[in-house]
Amino acid sequence: MTDRITRRLMRYWDWRADTYDSQPGQRGGGGGGEAWESVWRALFPAARPLQILDVGAGTGFCSIPLARFGHRVTAADLSARMLARLREEATREGVEVAVRRCDAESIPEPEAPYDAVVARNLLWTLPNPEAAIRRWRSVLRSGGTLAVSDGRWNTAPRTFGRVADALRPGCEDRAGLRFERDYLPVRSRLPLFAGPDAGVASRLLRDAGFVRFRRWEHLFEKDPYGIEESGFFIVSCEKIGERP
Image (cartoon, rainbow, N blue to C red; front, side, top):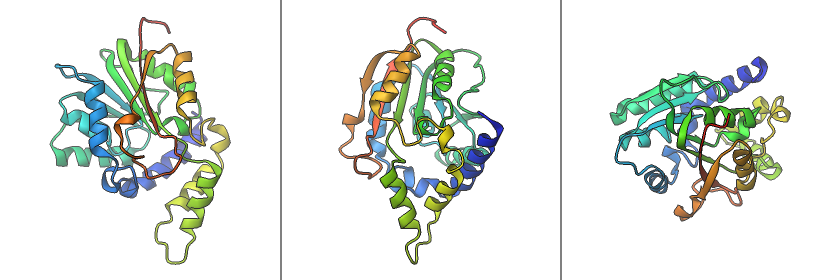
């Protein structure tokens, strides 16, 4: 990731951290918490605690429940402020989560390979998703699981609606305008900026060498983000062997 893109994205997500959990799909905005917990329990039913890496962890939407279930979780994110909020929430919930400030392509080498990697709503904002996925695979043990979730967040109609809502008289939430301003200069460098669908994500994962694909969004009664035609998906797959 170039320094210019890195700085711009860090500024936006550091700014967004204090209000991020109030938006739909997060803890304070609904978020389908029980359904997500069903996904985690189905994906990671092992009797022993697993070593799990949460990439693009944000304020801990995935990290904290996984830690609550007894897993040993490492949360990685580019934003120091997001990680600070994650630490605060982990303290409130009485769970322990290790944090690493880094981008998705530069995950530090773990002492032992992770049993699982999760990446929620991250692919769309990566300059090089192929390199990031290869890195996630490299830190997984053979037989380990990768779970990726995303959707079509930034299509043209969504962009127009976001700006229109922010410009309504009396609107106090200007996050949509800030998002468009900060991402406008770099969106052409983000190949999945509009948001991937499940087919695109699965192709990237297969190209990286993952196998044994499963889908999990059927566990949700409705779209947890409240967005019509978001294409929200959860895909899991496995690493078999040591292909680089």
